[in-house]
Length: 411
Image 1 (cartoon, rainbow, N blue to C red):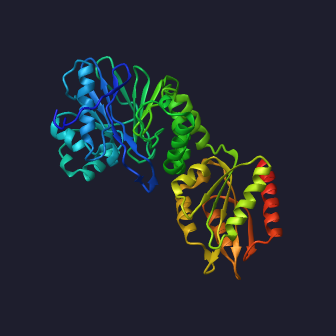
Image 2: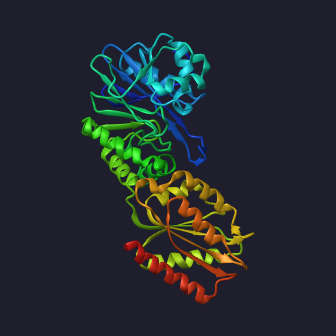
Image 3: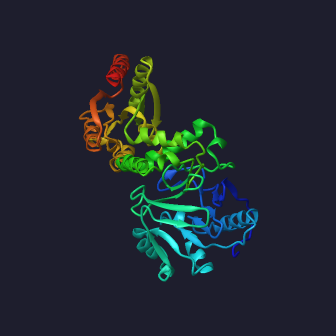
């Protein structure tokens, strides 16, 4: 096959289903989201009669994919060819090799959601004459002993998104849903420590899926009503690890989508002359004294995609800022703007919030942060402000405020 300029192994994930994706060890930022590598997962499904490729890879990274396709075909003792191409999502990290595929196999039908066809042609004008086939929920294609069922999943996370379910073996090829941005040597959930896998999956949900939480709940219900949820044995997303224990991520999505939180507080602050920092630390001590799990972020160095990972399962979020020019410190603007788009209240439950900080004379940062947070869907409980440098009494008061906030969390 064209492009086989390297050797790379495929990984069998079920009978007749192979991972043939790409390991991107080097990427560090995507969608304004910090990461330490990711994968572009593509899957080859072998039927007795035909072979289907589900999704592909980012532009310029296809050499790995072609090598793995050849390896999978060799393992199955099949000619390295394709009969069907399935595009679950048009974004370039899933479709970047589609032009290569079309040039190699110009007669092979490309199945995708009807909303994807126009988008793919806009992304790649040379696909104008490609043999697209519109797929909708319930559409089935048979490969000979293997049946692929399409399930539209609009806005999880683009309008064109869909899932492909391989009925024999119960393999859900879920595209972005249930994914994680992580790059590891092993392909399965069991190849990562549980706390690492949970962290990267939670970060993915917080940054990409949170505003779509109501749709997650509806899609789970839809899968249940169609009798598919109980048939899932493997969830194979387009990024990260493959779930051999799918109930783990299904349960996590159900909790995140419905606003289930822990007895946990996330503190996010910046400081000019360390006054707001002292308040943050004192508030944290008061919360900790009451058994609250506290996570702290300092905006001098910490960035938004990590912060919102912890906001996702926190019951309380505290935002601290000094006043500068009658406004919050500029670094708070980025996270506030980001929260406006994520809308954590889309889970159906508002998170509790507090603003705090120091002022020189007129103040205003805590009030303006509170107004912004209310507009973002948070339930703001309190605005805490001190003048200049907090005294010992001020810090003792912050500690007591932390204890009082812990009580409100229990309520």
